[in-house]
Length: 330
Image 1 (cartoon, helix red, strand yellow):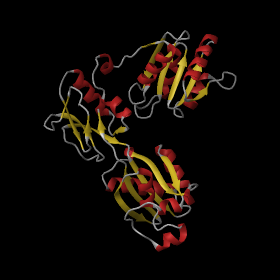
Image 2: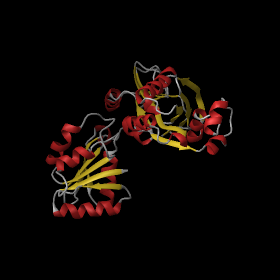
Image 3: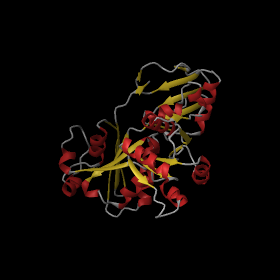
Image 4: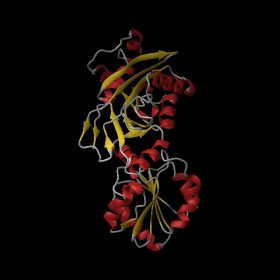
């Protein structure tokens, strides 16, 4: 985890040192001699997974308030006092993991976590926390409120999964698609088994790809998104983009990876050729790259799973999609 940390006082700096030494994360530390606290906050807000501030909570609220935009993209923000008495998550408690970070900090420093989210206070199932901890993307963030409100009213919430379910369902979740509201765990965004459906898509998809040198980033992005849409898949379920090492510096691939925050991995022709399976073959691709197929082989190699969308091609670009094995665990 990449964490930005800032302390406002000398006592706070000592606590900051304790926190850094107690954790194995990559820290970006605020230096008041280099830039202002506001500039530091603005620079790190979307560059880090989490931010820890040691000082007055009012200052932090004024700093991060104008930057907050979405549960999906906001980092976890935790505020601690300079004595390390309290750890208070103030932003992205569930999806971003601020609640968990506050609990971890409290355990290591001896602080008291101040958790204010209703589902946690009432010991109820929190769908956004479950999704975040199990590698699922919520396709429509607005549905989180619907699910949480129903659970807090002690209403039954339906549950459907395309994947094997392991463990016992939380008390209020029912395997009943006749209920008016529920959670659907599937790679298919179009699947709506309930009148009000929260779609949770496991991030288990790898897109294997290849392209001509100099392919425009806009054209490549459009092709990737169109391939996903045609196969009823969401970009939010993509965990990685994979290709051959000849393409490791290709701008359109790097741009796509950065924009959608997915890993970009490449393999040698020997590694790709070593994958067993039935793949489409191209003599031209073999002559240029040293392997008979790049997109399908790289997708399967990275995912360690099954090919679910075979090779698609358009104007010098190729794409294939594989999915890793995954189980719906409770």
